[in-house]
Length: 143
Image (cartoon, rainbow, N blue to C red):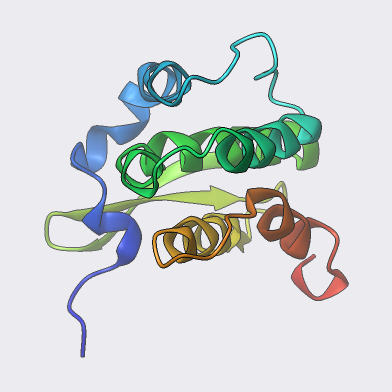
């Protein structure tokens, strides 16, 4: 059995991750080559990211190395649209993940779904951050 969590594995900041959130998002936008004007924290900006990654043939390695910034961006889109907040969660000794909480304080699985989509891209499937986002937000079972 795995003694870790996929979100903890890509978190190099530990419990201090959210202190670096804005810089990580800006760094990701620049690294991937996304237009900062189109990255307005709207749901439409998620379509833009998917189309950009696919249309510009952004390498899987580049996408994966910027994954935490992408996840934080999606978390911000989610909380701005649906309400809620991001919070660090200690899952074991010295292992921290960023968690998305809904306005009713229940935890959302949005970041795991998006991680799965981007990780699948590393396995030769097209990424769909948008599909992962709407699988959670438009699905009555996840409300």
